[in-house]
View (spheres, rainbow, N blue to C red):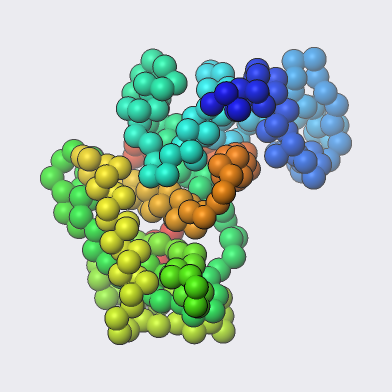
Length: 279
């Protein structure tokens, strides 16, 4: 944490970093996409074309936050530093947040920033299959739990490495046509796809996923939140060999400034449809 505080000693340093991440290639007005602006005295940028005033945090997961950006940065650092993730209770305690709800909401906002839209698809030899995970409730976490069907795609990079990158998705039930739709979205055309037989890669990822969910979520997970826990597992798995946690921190914040705010009401809403269900 001392390293992080040396990099970002105050909120001004945090704002400057977010500006480099969001507008490093040039300013773009969120209303008219204008590239020209003038800097207002209150730190906002004013579009010369439409006069829209905007801040670097507007329309991101930091939208209208009343908490110091330093705290958000510390949260991102802690989340990426922990190999198996971090509970809301631990985050609240370490950061000294007033409420558990704030820590819980921040974790969910960061989870929504962990998967990049338009990311490269898997390629080469790829295993695609399904698994059932335990501890998923139809309502809220802590209620009676059941099982959910998770679709798994795993790259097989060849000799010397057991597994490459992965993709995860949800299905309404096992054996649906959704598995083929999932594969089309997750795998590069021309790849060699295996969907039958032993599928050792799928089996190993399924085992690791279940162990991670059980260890991270002691009280189960609400079904409408599961896609975002799958995102977090994918983010961590695909970067498991990263040597420098500063790179993971950078990747997470890089996505955070292009991810919608996702207010608490939306996160809590069980009727809010996950953004990728290929069934």
